[in-house]
Image (cartoon, rainbow, N blue to C red; front, side):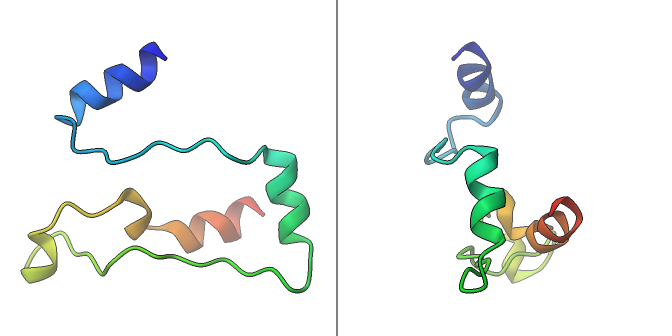
Length: 71
């Protein structure tokens, strides 16, 4: 809980939600199923230009390479 609160302070409370809903073993099992796919519901983001004016969710950057590397 202390780490979560420290993160919110560092982030100037711009974080909308922190969810801890699935265990690592559940994720690994789900990804083994042929009907399961990975989705990214974040909006487009960029470090500059018009897409850089928003406060994007962290998953907007590097989610798919991370999933491929990890699983």
